[in-house]
Image 1: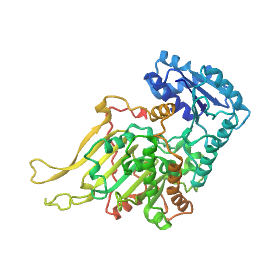
Image 2: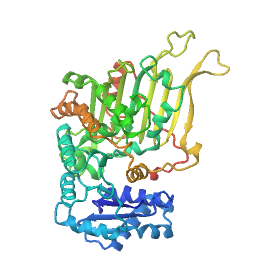
Image 3: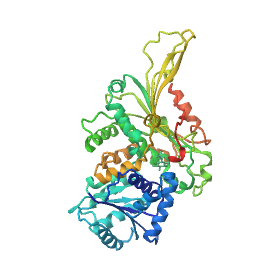
Image 4: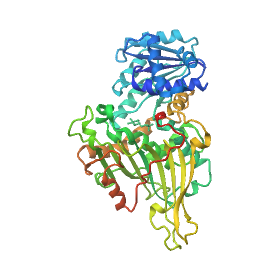
Length: 491
Ligand code: BG6
């Protein structure tokens, strides 16, 4: 089946750093359907060859020695460029005619990718509709919408309504690239393709769950955008809540898009709503000290670059089990991990045995960059009486499978082409996620409490975050993963 991928915002960063390298990788691995054409549109006046050259350099920077000249030439022959402005309705009929001239078959599937600043989403959708480009009479027409999908519940609803005027829900693919990560998909495999974890995956055995997405890099040149977003909109509404749903959901009976998404939606619906008092008691916000020196950031900025949120999922499985979500920029290392902290044994018969919660069993799902799984448990130290120590069983994806971890966009682009929306957010999912985040964001915007606390780069966020956990008798799992067989530049 033939496909055309149309990228709006072709000269942008996402196209160069993620989309084209991912499509090239699919081509290299012979997974890209042979009759695939890529058309880029943006305002820059490139010829086809000029754009191909820009993309070649950008792809080389991402994939390094995997850029093989012959393979690239073969791939580049599928790429075309059409100069145009998404805000001008009159540019779309011409684009449509150009795409049609490239499509030998009438039944070519089209994927429209909005790799644009969010303020251009609505006009692009409207103009696609006016030009008859969403019409599925002859073949599927799909649209991929990047994050941020709105900036609160209200704007997400408006955006959903606008897109629904032109595209039906089955045509819309709201991307959250975390869902394309192999280790994220593996959360479901670990839970539902094994028997030993599920019986203990509940309030009876689990004390709490920690989901951390730490980044060592500061905000840097994205500061102007980041200033109006902040950590909640940038990381919590999408990535962290998605990880929460996969960790907390019930097993769907089938692996199809709606069954999976129905279960995820149930988790989001069960999250206990935040009152002002909850925001004060159950959230922490911080900003790294040098953030206000970043270009485009006002000297009195109150934007959070660190956040920690404790929430509850009010259902039978999770009643009373806190889920701690935490993310920050300029932290001590880059690590995304889900920690399932189990309860202590009901009775400790060994003198000197573990008595604190963080010495009890723990399952750590390393999402990235040291993709793996660890089970922590107590063992007897040999020849030392009954001295015990927490040790671990350590599984590492890269060692075990001696392969590379593909980029999330490879999987996601292929899924859109094949028409599988399982790893994309449905309209209700996005709105429910905003519904959780909005009251926290509102309270923070009004100055808290909690107060915005400055933190030093290279640590684990504001000191209060540690104190807050300690007051609850718990500790953050602040461990930078050891990376085996891995080149950080890959990420
Ligand atoms: C993006 C955020 O969605 O995810 C960025 O906008 C963040 O701020 C990035 O750095 C993290 O993605 P990854 O795949 O590197 O964990």
